[in-house]
Amino acid sequence: MFERIAMSALRRFLPPLDPFLIGLLIAIGLAVVAPARGAMDRFMDQLVYAAIFALFFLYGARLKPEAVLAGITHWRLQLVVLASTFVLFPVVGLMLVHFLGNWLSPQVAMGLLFLTLVPSTVQSSVAFTSIAGGNVPAALCSASASSFFGIFITPALVSLLMRTKGVGLNTGAIEDLVIQILVPFLLGQGLRRWIGSFVERHKALTSFVDRGSILLVVYAAFSTGMVNHVWSSLSLADFGVIFAADTLILFIALAATTYASRWLGFKREDQIVIVFCGSKKSIVSGIPMANILFAGPSVTLAVLPLMLFHQIQLFVCAVIAQNYARTVRPVETRTVHEQQTESPSHSYTQSR
Image 1 (cartoon, rainbow, N blue to C red):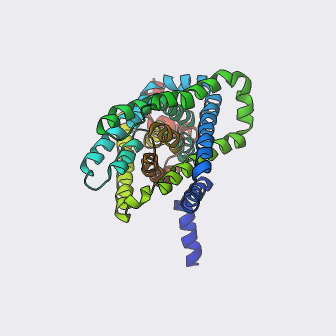
Image 2: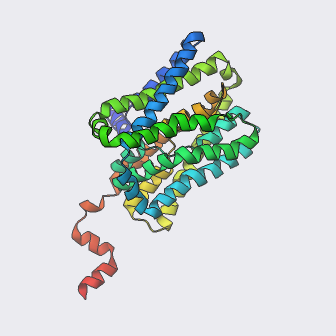
Image 3: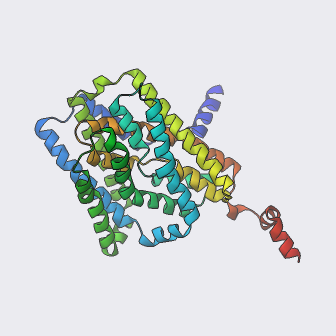
């Protein structure tokens, strides 16, 4: 009896086991046991290059231009999410790196700051918004806009905030960024008229490319770390500091977006969008960008805080979404009487 109650509670509060997270762990384990060396390492470089190109090509083919335009019209919501993603997060990141400088190696500090500069994630933001009963179309537009603008904003922020601190930004990063990210994205947008319907019909294929490319990048990054003995510089205390810093960043983002959305007078459905889209960071966009922006073994530590943050945000936001679902009903499920009683001015107008 007690075991059934305990298992029911775990299923209620814990997110379902994500195959993607399992894949990430397998990729890391494979890199530890059998890292790519020599000819295999050169082959992996070429494979990762092609995978990143395909990833952003398919993203360009999937993203509807009208969806972005529709989302931009809800400018107040989009502005709050973008401000959280590209202003609040970097400020928090700079403050943490400043105060934790004595407890973090330069490479880990670089990764922690880089985490705060990447765009918001799309899939989990929309999924959690849907579970919580929020404005799903606005979430899709907001997260997509964040990912799109992040193609330009993230490299600019990296160049502005990191280059002066000597963290090893690759001097050819901008050229690589254009070739590997911007060109395939624009190419996908240009060919969307002919291949868009095919991409939308074969979601399993595009999902495989999305996640498969990330697994390749993770394996290659951690292989580089193993070959160059990067991990020997990290201790359990370092991991503890990274975990605590990631958790603090997420807590600040969730608290700020929650109270700001209420203070600005957004509807509950839009508040949910701001909370979930404004507090996320995308491992899908962040890891390929890190692979392009940072040279050599430094990419391994640059993505570690982001990977850990990704898992923390999935767990915490799953719990929050379930709580929203139990306490907040979508507008369309409320009765007419409930909606009228919530708006005194509406009732007054009707009585006249």
